Length: 124
Image (cartoon, rainbow, N blue to C red):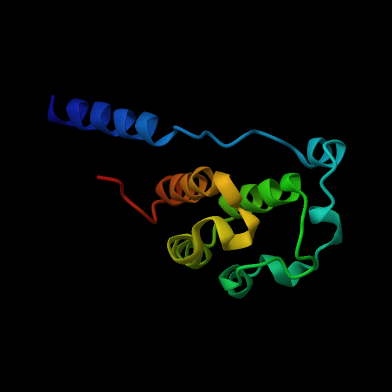
């Protein structure tokens, strides 16, 4: 009985955390929507040391779809250190971090959800 209650509380917590569910998209959908970030950025940008920079490396004014693609990719990687850096940078820069703008809380929730899924973070 105790385990059943814990499981139900866990499910309720996950449902509460998914206020901003991540979209399910494949790379062809991103390309159709006009994202050129995935196709033009060198691999080094996706390494964990690059997430500590506030701006994109290749351009100072990326398209909104490229910003969404960037955070979508970051939320789907399995680099716990990078996720921690991203959360620190959100706390420090909020809407200025990686041009996240008004959607910074949504992108931050994607990273938190990824950390919970991977077991790097526990929400209370």
